[in-house]
Length: 328
Image (cartoon, rainbow, N blue to C red; front, side):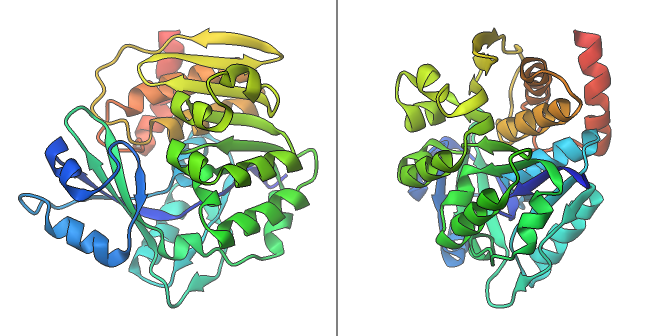
């Protein structure tokens, strides 16, 4: 196999602002959630932020953040995404390569801007997002994507991939074309996305079961109802349901396990689920059990919430394994 993990996801340049809750409430944004915006609406939002602060800029997207973790830890990763032919698109390609992730889609849209996600972090470390998807939601299907996915051990995607027709059907074609030995990993991403696109999640599940499912409790309830533990067993071989600072639930080999949360002082929850998935999949590739892999993902998540960034530095990723061993 050329790749350990091939991801299919939205390519977004994150611009992060630290604001008060009152600003978020005044914008019409969904607190601690995701809302789509036009590029012009984003510009207006930015102009209304008190003090006109400069954003922290990072190439993001949920799948990309997960792959950045896995790649920097040692997995061979490729990404199928859609960019615009613009400055942010070039920035994104360079950032992927810098993180050891191979960009697998060479086509860049001429008429659409690269997607941008405005991330607003409030003092209690909760994130609220206003997203212009732009080119990122117009993935142009390509038969090469299937051969690229079949050259991987795991195909990984996110719930955000289901929010546009082009992205969803391109992903569906990839999934249908995947050989059975290619494992399927999915992050649900957002409870609002699950609610709005439930039929698409059900269609994906009808095509094949999920080998590794990542979600938080709100997303699990949105997909499977209050009795989510029993319902998720029907669609996923292995799953983890996180619950913020509370314990996580792991399902593996038809057994449930509780995973204690690390007690840390969180300053930014942005990227916690992404690094959890990426670090866990890295350990799965290294032949760890799902439970043991999730323990490492849990540790990685506890580190990222203490940072004002959805990603660690290269040194930070390298230190994860050593520090995890020291803490065990």
